[in-house]
Image (cartoon, one colour):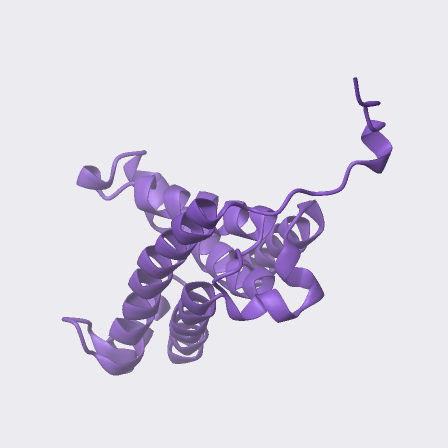
Length: 175
């Protein structure tokens, strides 16, 4: 019988290849959807309103100047989504998405309850959960981050993502 290694000495076991492919699928689907959502705001593609109309909408929500907030939101979604999709700067990409979606929940969707059929928070909660989970797990071996120390995941990167996202949301909500 082999001796059992103490818990303090156990090393993190790498993801299985199936897990890495699963993370890639999750990152691609949610990342590209968010990037597309940002492109709608910025460029008016995929049926989006474009920056001018989105800026006017942000102004109607109390964000002034609306166009600047629309630009920040659109860039956060576009770049955060692309970063998540390819697994690059994953904690920061996650933070960008978390911040945008906390704002969306606080200013728009929470008034409509939980379910998306009523315009509620369901979609936003799902994206935030995915962003935190990917930051905690790490993007996997099929990601550009595999070359960097933060690519290993863990609670440190997850805490950074959640903290930065929350701070960003708090700042924009108080302006």
